[in-house]
Length: 202
Image 1: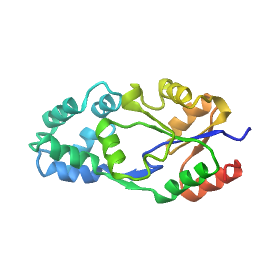
Image 2 (image 1 turned 60 degrees about the horizontal axis):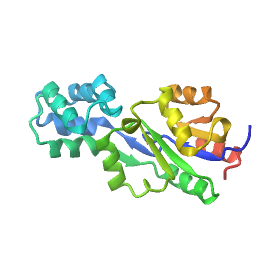
Image 3 (image 1 turned 90 degrees about the vertical axis):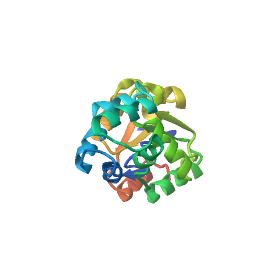
Image 4 (image 1 turned 135 degrees about the horizontal axis):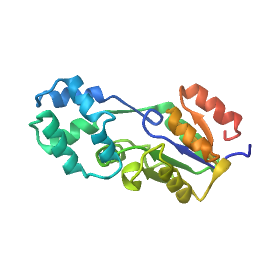
């Protein structure tokens, strides 16, 4: 395999960890449902999929969540609770910096939505440290849909084994590998860094 010329990082569970239980607890305090019931409404459901593929916008997502949960808070309160679920995975932030110090461009390829993207962009200082971003709600497709990988190829100007992709989900990794990308299924920062070193990127 040739040495990759660009590295693409997933965002959730790779650059940032997240836990929807935090949002569920805050929203439950102003709704008719329990924390677990709210999580089932917003965590990897058709409603969230529609939001993360840009088929509905933030206000419509908010209205539908209110209708499904009886949420009585304001949109601003909802937005804060829904978005404030992330913590930085510092070791991978430093990994990105180390790769960039070698002169290798890095990118983000993420299934995400407007609220989460805005929150991360505003609150996390590492987020500008990439050459570009492919975000599902802007592209209109989520991993492992082929369309989002094509968008990443267009953005980077690279194809096949020129690209190294890091993601925590096996289905997303498999879709990238099917396009000839080199891949790492992220499980631990130490294992990911060791594989990056094996590929000659550090």
